Image (tube, rainbow, N blue to C red; front, side, top):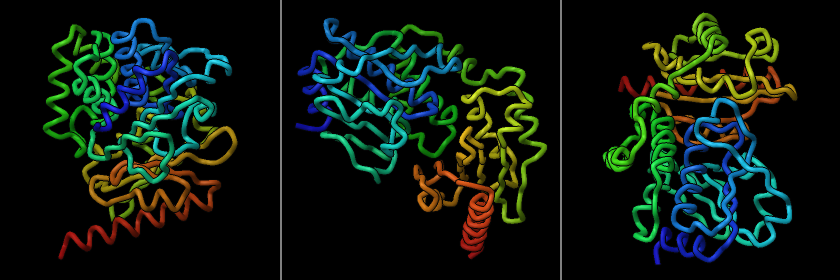
Length: 319
């Protein structure tokens, strides 16, 4: 029995299913979570299916999370989507269910769950959820389920321009577009920004530091975020922006948290950055990772390490 059949069997076995995703979600985290819920509901109308985690206004168009009492976990199947590391799981009750499944496409450095399906070659977990659906004839997919899975794929592939996009990704996207939902609305929603975000984008371009090697960085302090009237879920949309500059090879965006430390978003056009992320309480993909800097000194360290990494990458390219 392959992993997709095992997951289907577990879903069939439980009457209550609770689906988690990572903190500070992106379209794939929400899309895979909500998409899986829609598949289970369409296939098993009598099951109780919940999606948990903080609700963000910017992702309300993809679905709303549920309030779940602690005792509901007692006999539940818990599925965690798109979350590589346990500290990043949104809602700490995920281990309190009766059985735990991890579905993810990041490197499997933190192995958790009774059953794990991890495919780092997948463009997104939304792509994997579609594969789960298509591998089991008994599973059904609603139009709205297809909509949110498509949104997850579009988000995590950067509109199909990131290297993680494969021929299979396009096959999955093609399969999803056969359902009834407005394709143009997905692209419009994911590209849409409000006035504070437009101001933030301008701030990023005006204040981005770019070294001679092509390593770039910017620090967004609590003071800056407050002045720009941004919420706690608003900075993710500017993460790809430095990559639009031809001279930029890789970049780090430091976002100060309310507690004072900094969340680091690392992106690259070539050099592998996930090992750097691991040195700073993080991890992720070779070209897209996250980490944490506890203070300004650690920011300086990360910037220096990124610059050195980029210099070495450039030297290899010249040989």
